[in-house]
Length: 274
Image 1: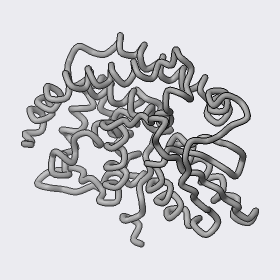
Image 2 (image 1 turned 120 degrees about the horizontal axis):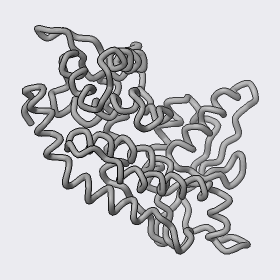
Image 3 (image 1 turned 90 degrees about the vertical axis):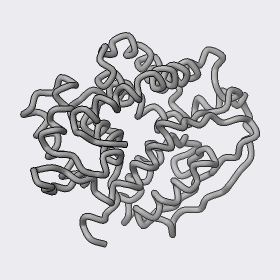
């Protein structure tokens, strides 16, 4: 596979609000709507609307190129084209970010059982890391659980890592546990950490900028990690005071209000059309 066709991984390690994360969010939101290309000057200008100085923006853009998200390309002027290899990652992100799915008790699960030889421990490490990124829980070190609708995503991870030969997937119904299922879920997922993520997101809404473009990008940038790390567990597996529903509702409300005014601003800067 050519270097520019290697799969591009979502940079969810980047801290929300950082230059790298905000630029990644701009690219994910708008480059496809701009026919895949943006001038360097316009991208730096949009970064400036988020309070990012030009020098930091250019450094951040270089990082996106190194990660395979952008390709330098002139179209009458210096600019950047979205890498074709990034499209599957962005499309998968769209499904998470804009169509957050919450499970019901009737939904199926996917169990991920693996036995990876010690000689391939780096693959084992990457598999665990990427299963965690998609919100899978840890039943035991070599048995993970995730919502059944994520099985195709697990398959893609296994293919990316060349790990399919060591992994067995089991579609499953609701787990039967020796303790109340809400207690089991608290062992399989770090619900305390997820709670903190939701509360931090809700707190961040009070500091959104007034300008629609900056507010929308900051909203999506702060939100976009949550639909990955939160699997959307059914209510029966969550404490009664779980804050997830409020996060989902607030995100949907603000996104609906801000998305089109933000796009109008991008069109004004770039001259782009929908």
